[in-house]
Image (tube, rainbow, N blue to C red):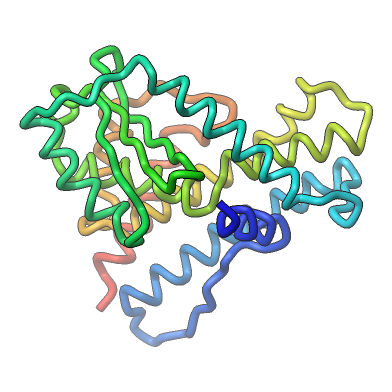
Length: 254
């Protein structure tokens, strides 16, 4: 858990941006680096805008201590959320595990569990930070019928949120704003939407540059289930347009 706390605290100051070298004919790696740098810079800018809006001075707080409590509370919420799910074995569950394990099990200490919830219409990916365990929650029977590239695209998107600790940092930003101003929780939450949207865009880009099909699976998912826009997510059509642009660049790269 200490490793997560230090990574999250560092992310308050800067995202892990990768430099890019100019090429006459871009390589795939150059295109990937370019887009991830753009995504990280966008998240950094929205975080800094939020800091400026509420005149937050990070030196006045102990983000490590605050994040430690956030993680403890988050893990408790995860345990409560998963208490109503089942983990019985099934063929469909095994198929999903095969895809998810390639995405989430790079760390030898990381654990993965596929949890079946027949009431779900989408996929939930939830980390338990203390146990270093990833829970993929889904209606496994329905999900297994999807194209494997769609499942991969969704899981890679969710992995970005875990790698960058987006939900935890978003909550921390709102907490810092609450203690730095007299603004209402509702206004603080609404003013944090820009940061959350930037995190969603970064997760889309992360998925595109790390997927075998250069984001086509995620494009297919958005095109199939359009119309579920929310205030803290970019519009579906904007996400699709960006993903298609990235895919075209990756397809054309050497």
